[in-house]
Length: 336
Image 1: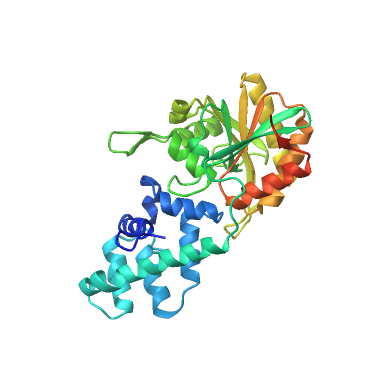
Image 2: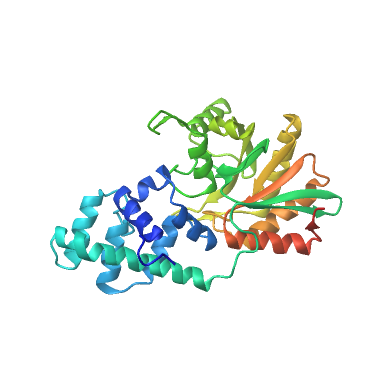
């Protein structure tokens, strides 16, 4: 809880986000918001949408305009969103700015904290890693944003079968790696969107431009700017198949199995000492974390003994707990 005489850091971040807009969510850090979202196993934008969905009447409409979660408003300028929010209460823009807007943001902060209070404490806190022994092998489970990993030779990403990466302003694994790998100028603008460029080149070279690959295909790229973290290679696993007429995906265990096999084969061929895998399909592809871990662990069992040091990364609390439960069921114990 914020000190009564100090600005509430969560409200402060919400004010900045209101001004910057959700499209620029990844342009700057929001530690309070990101921490809350990660604890709840949600991307920041989805967390805000959930908060708005729990509101009613004018408050719901004004909050949706203020935050840019109302349909079609994500790319609106802050001034336009404020104008529409003021209309909800039939106030002038200036009066709304001085009075109602802060109350709305304070209510959002309170709602987020209420959601956090209802959640269980994390078994593995954000930013931590746990070294485990499973049979005769060791692995490390990380709970952190994938772009903060250091000194892991190769990191795997989850992609769709068209190898079209998520937009860098989104919160998925693919988007996070894309944003972190991009080369930027002194003011932070992207001058080389490295990963999509290399994936497009691979598709052209293999006669797949504009088409799709078989689910489970793995395509290597350079790490781009992630080389500063000691990363040597990124492996893009095409495991998500778009469902026609919807925004949903299908992820089959056979695709995950092929992808994991392809990743280990490439890692061995390219001399990678370590590889980090996500829980494929647990994000935007729609698998629940328990199912995603079961698919991953089943695929890993087919690769034993692992040819290189294994890492598993997940950002959400639910994903972490699902991985821990699955690993313990497999007999994992803390490494000595």
